[in-house]
Image (cartoon, rainbow, N blue to C red; front, side):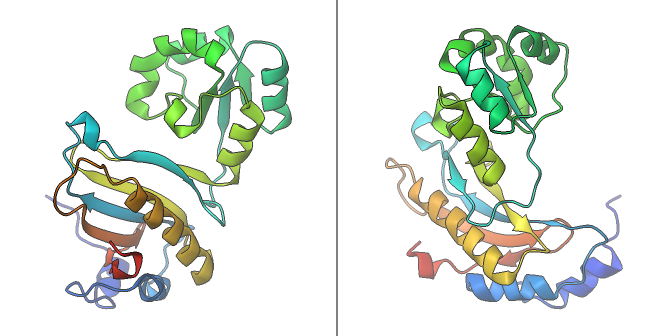
Amino acid sequence: MPAKPSKRYRKALTMVDANRSYPLTSAVEVLAKFPKAKFDETVEVAFRLGVDPKQSDQMVRGTVPLPHGSGKVVRVLVFAKPGAAADAARAAGAEYVGFEDLIKKCQEGWSDFDVAVATPEAMVEVRKLGKVLGPRGLMPNPKTGTVTEDTAKAVKEVKAGRVEFKVDKAGNVAVPVGKVSFTPAQLVENARAVIEAVLRARPASLKGAYVRSCTLSSTMSPPVRLELREFNA
């Protein structure tokens, strides 16, 4: 039996018109008026796309820097052999830096980090972790800038608020754009950056509608449907 919606959630439902699509700025204003939870909720933009993720030429993924960061403390692991790349990663603030020791630790099931970065040289061995890190979305990937010689740049960008997006098997994409404690202007700018990045990622082979729906919500709130005409979507 599904859990009964909380009193706070039911009140929020009365404050949004489920049949209306709101311009981004208006949607953020509505979200800001919802009753607050006892913790700093994450705000995210969610898309339902008209793509077929089973087709390799319709995969939608990428990264986007959030102008005001994500509000989340990001723990970064860097796979690098001892040397300049490893030293640079430590200096940039990576929580974990290592090679064979960290590979062994991950093989044993450890995954107490949010993003993994690897040098191209290290990837020869890190690839063996595909079955362990892949399902958790933690596998370094050149397309997301997490396989690179410039480990310092990658660490700094991730910690500054670069987020990754990837379509799931059902054609959905959900991307965090900040916290409820952010100012409305910060949430608008972060959400705008994400929406524009996802729109730019439209597969060239796609025929028909790309974005079927787009919503803004916080961890404990109902969704607010977004009107994307201002983005030429």
